[in-house]
Image (cartoon, rainbow, N blue to C red; front, side, top):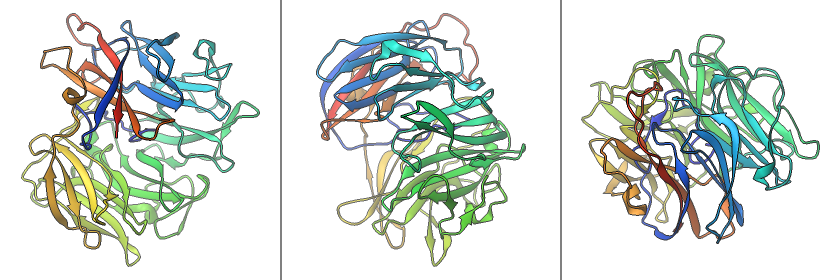
Length: 446
């Protein structure tokens, strides 16, 4: 993520504007960063650490670039790294800062050798150097992710990625020893393994109110997103020992045979999409898994799953008359997007959504029954509310990335924003690419 959402998604789902509606916020500052590539969508990263801010992106010439500033300043220091973006929307860039202040960066990978840089001086982007990690199982890397809010058993910075390909992959976790400045394996086995027949795509791990790290995932049989199946869940106190939602120990690597991890045995081609399976919690710290699948009539509906009386119980939330019939590989446009459940001040749960046909809104949900109480339709915090669009072309859309860190002011939230053409199924586009667009950091007062 990994930010708002872990980016372990084989079919990259591209949202048109803000992924999920948020309450109105006041724009207090807009800071231009650079002119950036806009020929196809690919994720950039924003990280605020104290009074410092870092942005990792691909510039107008597709070069991997890092920009840095002190909060309150408008001038950016920039460093260009020896990586060039192709046409693959999976090749986002991600960044982290360890406890000693050294900056770590990875990206531009979809089934290729690990790309990783680290600074040789704290908070100094001019000192980025290519670096090694563990050295094994690093030839077919996809979905790199630092986990700044989840730490190892001794507080180590963690890094995860998929080794393999869609339909045939294992999930690897590394940990970083700050004193030794060295990476090693967190686990002596992959966390999940498809056994050469499938692979897992995650939401999480995220830190829950109960102190556990929580994650859920779906299995995928091939590169076709219609072959997602079997929602699973696990939790851990130390990222090493994992258990089911009822506390049963899970043997690693977790596989499709890990029956205690299964939340809902959704079959293939049943409307389940990686990237749209989310975690939330109720006021009793019980985990809630929110996702969509087809109902018996073939329409796409939202469901919530929660452990009740020692077993997962599935609750239908919606009654939509709409079917999102996605299929194939490559980047697709998101027709539906969800948030995880949160607890409102009135004690009711809330889940937000965007929908191609039904717009955007927030459901208020009874915590005990998980039945809908009411629905508030929302315009959401859309791109045009944050900033005017540069392009008037209907083919251009706005991309946003949430902050991977936090600044000194808890009342200020930062968002990274730029414009780009829509998904290209990871294939080169014909014709002349559009002109570069402006990458901006927008400061919002909560």
